[in-house]
Length: 174
Image 1: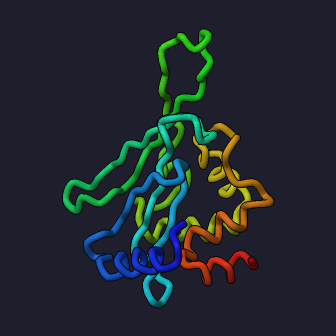
Image 2: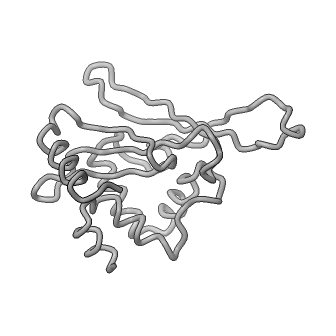
């Protein structure tokens, strides 16, 4: 998503400070997506979670995220996404009703939210059609209007862990 020089600076900074910056949260795409920053050997170092927009102008249902933190380490251990799905209730005059869409650990199973969990999820998404369908459904907070399709899936999947242009091109075949 960055020009190559900026991407390289961000990746090298996150690699250099991985003991300090273990997890990141960003909102640039306004969707539930993630990126994994790897070390020189390809092992996961930093997990970066994209979060959804509260506004529906990007094709998503409005949503927000509640983080669960470990009191001792202050690490994010889970997150829960809440969505507003009925934007037309009572002609748009009904009070907003937010509901839980999913929690990371419930949806994808396993261990606490971490770079390793995200790296494992990336592998699962490639191999497991049910996990991939779940990810696609949650990507745009359940709207079904802005998520990856089977035609675009490979590009989305490659973008998770191939953050520089050359690695992305190799992965996506582009």
